[in-house]
Length: 334
Ligand SMILES: Cc1cc2nc3c(=O)[nH]c(=O)nc-3n(C[C@H](O)[C@H](O)[C@H](O)COP(=O)(O)OP(=O)(O)OC[C@H]3O[C@@H](n4cnc5c(N)ncnc54)[C@H](O)[C@@H]3O)c2cc1C
Image (cartoon, rainbow, N blue to C red; front, side):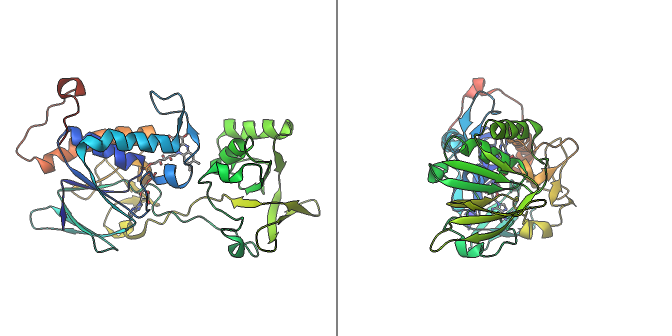
């Protein structure tokens, strides 16, 4: 059995930064993530995408941010269990909790922090003939390393932020980027959509609207994507890669059974300290909801700071917490 002060479900950016905020208050953390690596959406969905809204970094690549966060929490020596999914939480007589995974790991903790983001990642797969057959042979649901697409013919499908972001980013890398969308307007951020229209107008990408991908063809690997327009005949596009970006279906899994107040698939929290309706369980980052919630990394960082202040009373019930800047103590390693 692993014993710690705070067990954190999810090693995405918010779970990682929670270690830092807890560490400043001398609380030890153990993180559990079902993915084999830390970083959450940043490492799994968009490792090489630049991020522009992290304070102090005019531009930072997503994977670089994860590396920096790992460096920042190093002084607090967090424990990690990766590649295992948290399944159950049981309360002990003294109020503390025991968290168990599907991999037989058990963690005894005073506080549980759920930083589970979108839940366990599962891409929504469109219903297209031979899609599964070409997985790993041209079909992918995420862009892990954009270099894979250098000088290749890439067909993207979707109308949300992921499809728009990657169409823009890959325009400079791929030999040709074609974005296919069933509508003629996009669900993604208006500025991003505008940029995509500009690139299409300049001839830097191909945009095929009001159309759907209906078939895939090739011998060993993908070679052709069939596109059916609502108004036009079938078009056959040469393609080395097809990336359908129809979002990730939120699979909260066992978290939904822990007696937490939920709104759709998000956990309701008290914004004073990001506590849930269940004592000693907090929820921070993309997984929570409250009036005005923004699913942004920097909002999750703020939530982590307030969570740590709230969790302190369970870890050090006899101590009074007084707020101090890091200027006073620096970052005291333990
Ligand atoms: C394409 C794209 C671009 C984006 N660009 C920006 C941007 O420019 N700026 C910005 O601020 N935000 C951006 N975001 C949003 C940002 O990525 C999220 O707000 C952020 O990742 C949330 O962090 P998190 O730690 O809460 O959750 P996540 O990053 O989702 O991490 C949660 C982790 O919890 C794990 N997990 C879930 N359930 C369990 C379980 N039961 N057991 C074990 N592990 C579990 C998951 O595997 C995951 O690793 C973007 C998102 C996308 C998709």
